Image (cartoon, rainbow, N blue to C red):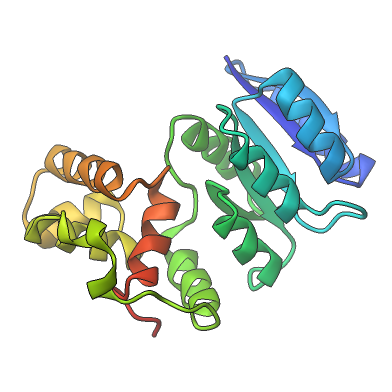
Length: 218
């Protein structure tokens, strides 16, 4: 059973999420929080698999709450929800360690699939939104340069190709087709890449690729 902590300052929004999640046989609502401070406290207390995190809240916002939750080293993973697809606060939340990004107008079935994916260690940014989101926030963030990060040098040529494809928003299936590999082989490459660069998940791998200059914003 995957447990979820719902974090949103609007009671009606929390109720909607609760109704959706409780209708799923494999999902359970561990609790609710109306702000960042409460989210941090309840995450430490309840240890949910996934924290469904709103960004804009009074007091401690979702960015700082995400940073503290991820920084604690616990097992909980954070899925950020926001109203705007170009919300700069959401970019900061990804840098703080969030494992995914969804708009609040996401279809219910997509949100459910996304929560399951995050709980399993994957990311949930759709390929189309990945490039738009990453391009936008990397243009205002300094990069260290490809030659300055030793982790990049530990990757094989094929692993660099796979990381570049991931950072471009390709799915495993698309990578397999374009690089003429079996999808199982692609999954193995992605896992090895993330282990070598120390990425928690696919989203962090994308950010790393942009940080070191392996991929440039459009």
